[in-house]
Length: 495
Image 1 (cartoon, one colour):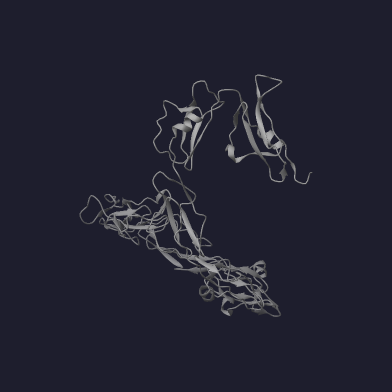
Image 2 (spheres, helix red, strand yellow; image 1 turned 90 degrees about the vertical axis):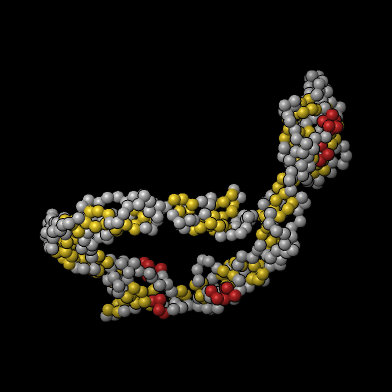
C-alpha cells in the first residue's frame, strides 16, 4: 500500500488516499482507496486485498493456449481454442480475470450442430411456425407487434448450434392526457379542427407540444420531445410571468436553491448561503413578472483562536480562522472534554465551545469531616479524572442510609456524609407542596443530622418574608423516627 500524503496526523473529516500494489485492490474493489477520518477512526479502514485469479477453468472440446501460470493478475486475459471440428462461433475466444473472478467461459460447438428454438423476443415473434430444432444455416424472420419498431437484423441464422443476435422491438410512447394537464401543455399539430388526437408515437419519433393559453416556457426547443423506447420526458409550461433561476447569478452572489430552477409568478422562495458565507440581506425573495431579486452572501468575519482553559488544538494553531472553518479540540492530560470535539466559526463567532473539566485529588481532611473512609479494596490514584466515582464507607460509630460514594465533579470532590445520631431525609413531595427548593449551600444533600438546620429558598413566583429554614427533630408521635420541618412559601400576589 502506497500513501499519497506526507501527513502523520489528520483532522476529523479529512480524507486519506492510498494506492494498492499491483495485484491488489482496495475494500471497494479499486486500485486506489479512499478513507475518511471519523470520531471512531478511519472509515472504511484502509487496506488492500488480493485481486488475482487462480488457474483458469477447462472447457469442453477446447484447450487453453499458452503455458499455464499459478496465478493471474486482475485484468490479465487467457485465450482458448477449439478442438478440430468445433468452433466458438460468435462468442469471444478469451476470458479475463476481474477482481479474483474469471469472466464467462466460451463454448466450443460442433461444426454443423443444430440449434434449439429461436430466442424469445418481447413484443414480437417469428413469422414462421416454430420448430424444436433447426439445421445449421437455416433462418427465421422476426416481426414486432403493432406500433413497435424493430431494431437489428430482421432475419437471423443458426450457425453451428448458435443463433445470431436477435433483434429488439422498441416500445412506442403513449401520450397521457392527465400528464399533459399537469404540465400545462397540449399537442401542437391538428387533425381537422381538433387537437390531441395523436396519442401515440413510434420509438425514435419526435413529438411537438405547445403551452396552453396563459402559460409559457423559457426555451421553445424543450417542446420538441423524442420517444425513446416507451419513455417520454414531458416539457412543463409555467404561468406567464414566472422566473428561471440563473446559476451564474446565484454563484456570483454565493447563494443556492436546490429544489428547482423555475419559479412561478408570485411565488416566494428561500435561498441559502454557500458554506462559510453569511447573508448581507434577506434570503427570502419573490418572483414578480419574470423578475427576481437575488440576495447576496459574502465571506463572514473571521474568528480569533478559541479560548478554552486547559485545552489544546489537535492541529496547528492559527492566528485566525475564516468563517465556515472548524477546529478540533482536545484537553490536556487528566482533563476531560465536555461538549463537541469539533467547533465551527460562523461570521466571527464560534459554536458553543466545549469545556475541559478539571481532575480532583482526595483530601484526607474532607474524609475526616464527613466521617467516611475509602474501602480497603479501593485503590484510588493520586489524580482522579472528572466523573470518577469511588466507593466509601462510614467510619466506626457513624452511619448513613443507602450507598456511599465520592465523586469527582470538575475539580471538586463531592463526598457522602455519615452521621452519629438520627437523620432526616429531604422528601421531594414536601418541597413541592411548600413551593420550596434547597438552598445552593447544601449542594442537593438528601440527609441531615438531628438538630441540623436546613436552608431553603422559594420557587420562582413564590415568596416568604422570613424564616426560610427547617430543623431535623425527633418525631413526637414516633420517637424512634426523625422529621424535618418545612417553611411554606406563598404566591407573590398573595399578601
